[in-house]
Length: 136
Image (cartoon, rainbow, N blue to C red; front, side, top):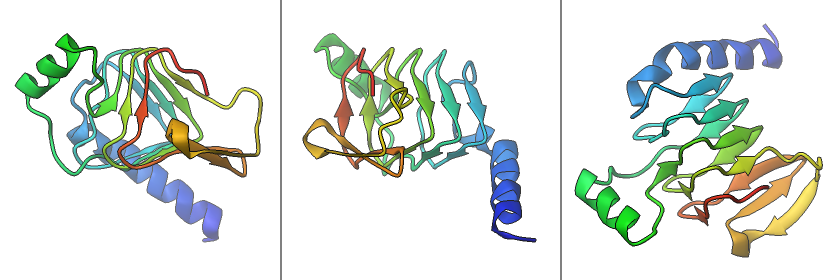
C-alpha cells in the first residue's frame, strides 16, 4: 500500500470515529481528521482538512460571556466552510467564515491575520482569531 493508500485509510478511519469529538452533529465533515475537544457549530462544512482540536474545553458560561462581549469561542463557528486547510489548536473561527482559497493562492504570509498559505493549503495558526465573515 503506497502513501496515498495509507492516507486514504487514515481518513476513512477518522471519518468513522470523529463523531466522538464533535459538539454539534448538525454539520458536514468529509475526508477530514478532527482532533480532541474540537467544537464545530451547526451548519459548518469541513472538507479535506485537519483540525487539531483544543487543549481545553471552554465552559458554557465562558462561551456565553464571550458571545455577550462579541468574542469568538474556541472552535468553528456556525455556517463556516473550511476546505483543504489545517486548523491548529485553540483557534477561534467565527461564524460565516470561508476558508476555501478560491483564488488558489499558493504562498502567503499573513501571520498577523492568524494564518499563512503554503502550497495552496491554508494553515490557521495556534490560538489565532479569525473574525466572523472573513473570507480566505
